[in-house]
Image (cartoon, rainbow, N blue to C red; front, side, top):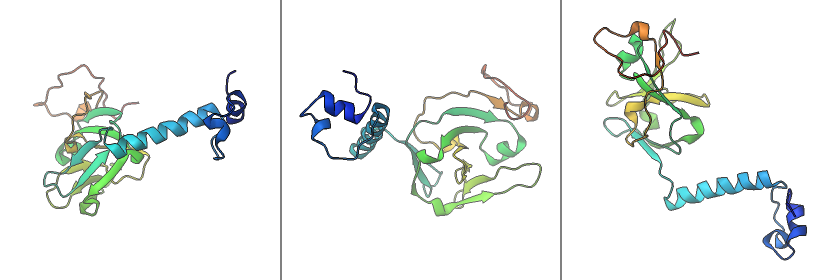
Length: 181
């Protein structure tokens, strides 16, 4: 018999965990699997099996961990990102960012028009941290702030029209004159 709900499992396996439990468990197999995946990840974090990605500023006042590997890495060649020292960025999910220390040591520089994205930095050493204080669900942080290897390579180049002549792009990642579409 195929179980599609907790009630089916109770009927199929009398005397099993599904039959004996009085817990308010999810009623579909999909929901039950999702709950189990969350519990497994929690246990891996608790016992240290799941490797978190460490990140910090230069002086160590700002420290954070990422639960999962960033999804994308890219390089912005605009003059503003180059001056901030954060040309290569990785995109992370807000839910994956865990602060260890120094969130109060992070400040944001908010530029004037036409730029709209603020850039965060450590108030002690000035290390660029990308948009680490963003309230968005996903946002870029400076790849140089990561201490752990993430095994990603650059997947795009943006604002290549602002790239200085002394910098040569040496990979085959797609290039765009603005933000990639």
